[in-house]
Image (tube, rainbow, N blue to C red):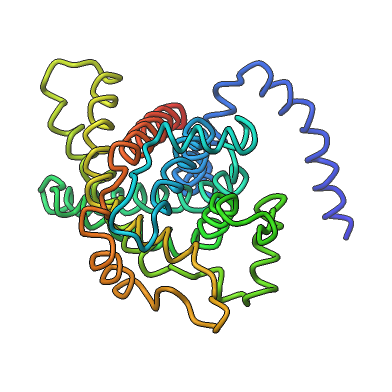
Length: 330
């Protein structure tokens, strides 16, 4: 007992010296903290979450318009086609400019969970695959990057589905008649009320297309970003220009591969039971079939420009911030 007390006293006596050393050499102290064996594995996840939340705060109005475009004209093959500008005008006319930020709390929570996981898993998987390739005297290839992106996206989507569902419900709430609106206060209110009314498992509604969409998006975004950066190394472009160009390429492929699944995910997460207790869509494949038959195949790519404008800048901001944070925390 006395030896434990002596050790504690000894530690306390060393505290002022440690604090003065930290004040004199802040960079060295920061470096030692970042290289702590317990902190180091968590850095890719922390950096990914911060990067994703930064991007969402900037892109949320575009995401709101994208969701409203996907839900417009449900079940109708012909008729007037809404545009991003007409949707934005409708939202503002029905309320105020800040309504374009509806669901921001859900978007930030989704990024805190989903992007933290997907970028963290991707960096972790890439690190392991790179080590394995070096041990064999080889370089890492596109197939390894694709596998890391697909796996990271799928795992992260499962974890982030409740926040994603809450985001869709909050953004689509304004399309209902006033008497039927839920008027969610924030993401926690949405999650609590959905779980109480429909059961906890309802928070994973649309999880299948969400996972497939995430895998497609990550395949396009992370795999092509990593591949593009590798190919741009010998072009003479500066590091920042390389990152910007690579993220632009990644944004296009992420949009192209993931939009049909994003469309179906939105429809499934927005749907609610009819008076007879049935749902409009039984699942992902049923939604694909009904939309193709009733609204046409091109409906899956309606709003591609808006989706790209949402995905590409989000991918660019996320990847650039994550790249920069990775550089700072080396």
